[in-house]
Length: 107
Image (cartoon, rainbow, N blue to C red; front, side):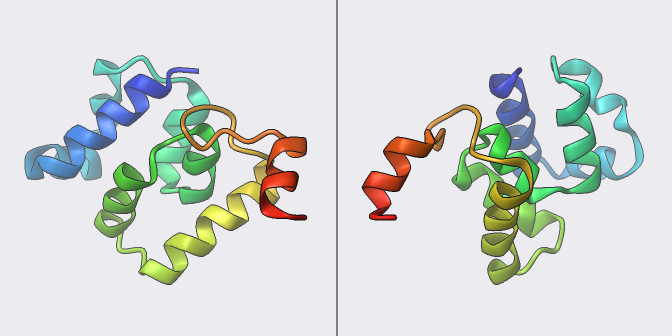
């Protein structure tokens, strides 16, 4: 997985209106980043849950969600739904392991 490039693209796009416009009309924008097909599809669909499960940092992801017009409560629910649908976070600072997370969360 290319989490670094995925987050780099989102970080850059969150701060650059020209990239945001390009994203809306020209997905060759992705060609400048080493992304997997799954990452490209998640970006294209605006799948907040999958992006979260792929490991995108929440500070980066919340700006992308706002750019896509996702309300705050829907953003939070999107992350929860992502874990339900795609399983635990796979990489990054939110990566989960079932045993550890259950003990920490008191489940």
